[in-house]
Amino acid sequence: MIKTIRTTAAAATAAGFIGYAQAEPLQPIPDLQTVRSVVLVHGAFADGSGWRGVYEELASRGYSVTIVQNPLTSLADDVAATRRALDRQTGPAILVGHSWGGTVITEAGVHANVAGLVYVSALSPDAGETTAQQYAGFTTPPEFVIDAHSDGFGFVKPEQFKAGFAADASDADAAFLRDSQVPIALSAFETRLENAAWRTKPSWAVIATQDKAFDQKMLQAMAKRIGAAVTEVPASHAVFMTRPQEVADVIDGAARSFSLAKAN
Image (tube, rainbow, N blue to C red; front, top):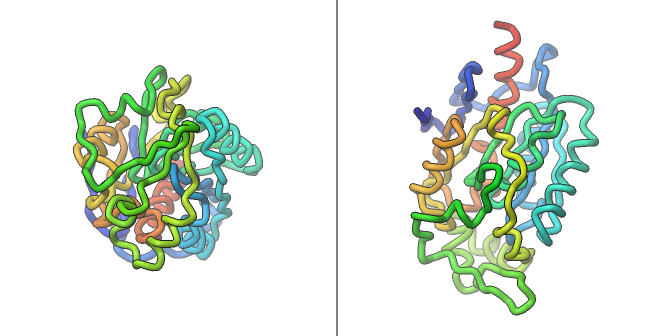
C-alpha cells in the first residue's frame, strides 16, 4: 500500500527501509552518513538549469551534487549522459529524475553507484514498457499541449506553456522556461526500456498536486506500482524549480535513511 506524506519537508524509505520526516530544513550531513552524493536529471522541454534551487539547497547541506544535461535526442542518449555522471561519483548517490527524467533514471538507475531513486512528478515505466504506455487509461489535462514538428521533435505549445508547465512560476520565470525550451525527439516515448531500477532500488516520489502535464491519477498509480514513499507538494509540473526546498528535503531524507538503516 502506498505511503503518503503531506508535510512540506518529508521523506521516507521504501522496500523496508526506515522512514524519515521533518518539518524544518535538515542540518548539514553528519560524518556517519553513507550517501553524500546526488545526481539530478531533468525532463523534456527543459535543461539542467531548472535544478539551481535544489542544487543550492543540497550543496548548503554538504552534498556533492551533479546535474545531468540530457540531449533529449533519444532514450539511449539521455541514459548515456546520466551514466557518465554516475561514473564520476566516488560513492553511492541518490539519483533524481523530473518528468521524462523519471524514465531515464529508471533505465540508468541499475548503475552500481545508485543507492536510491527519487521521482519528481516523473514517469516510471517497467522493463519492456515504453514511456507512452504509461498514459494508457489516463487523460492528460487540456492545459498541456505538445507542438510536434515535422522533424520528429516536439515543444510545449508556447501559448499553453505557463498554464501547462509552470503555473506557479512568476510570469518572468515561466517566459524564460518557455523561450529556452529544449525539444525532445518524440520517438523516445516509444522506446522500450531494458531495465527498471525501481524493482531493485528503494524509491521516493514527489507528486505536484497542481501538475497539468500528467493526470493526478496517473502520478499516484505510477508511485503505487513502484512502491515509492510519496510526498505531495502543492505545485505545478515545474515543482523541481518552484519548490526547491521541499524537493531537496525529500532527497535529503532519502540519503539519510541509508545511514539510519545501517545504524539499526
